[in-house]
Image 1 (cartoon, rainbow, N blue to C red):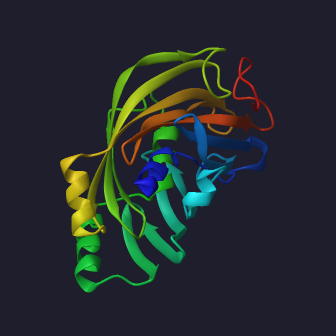
Image 2: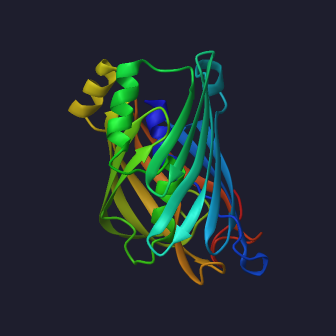
Length: 275
């Protein structure tokens, strides 16, 4: 469940420069709280260019949670920015959970996964289901969120993504709820307009039969807030995640961007750099 939540608020991205003059540098730290206690921190950095990207995200338990939760996750994604959106080239995910290490690497050709390396390996029937579920076309976790980020639309939601991370194939279905605004009394560092969307997670392949059955009966639903932030590299606004709410193992959580800068400055003139 914690890993599912991590996918939900691992809406981080980095774009490698298409040209040095047009590059932006985005840095964000999300802090996740449950019952008012900081449980996780997700850090990512971003170099934003015109036609390619590299996304990096690091998830770690924090505070008292680090004494009880053994989960670390690192993800890196690279690919192209095209007229049709973001496309994956390579994705790597390293996970340490309950003392066990795992590594997944996926190479893509456009929306098609062409090779996957896993350690540890999975059973043949699981591999067959993963291949079948991803054959319809997929992006990795970060490239999916990248596509939302660079979509030149006032509404980044009302879309569906098939995601493949080497371990699992799942869907993220987004739908706009309303327009919103972050003020001085709201959490995080962002201040200004935002769009609130629901995001429903549906597993397709890769998890145990018991876990898949549980999620299919009760698909996790999250609320996500995207803010319009001006990108010099893109020459327009991009959609930056600034908050997420949902549940982990039946417990409510909220995640805010508590540090956020673009090229060393706050996301806009009314926002803070950190808190």
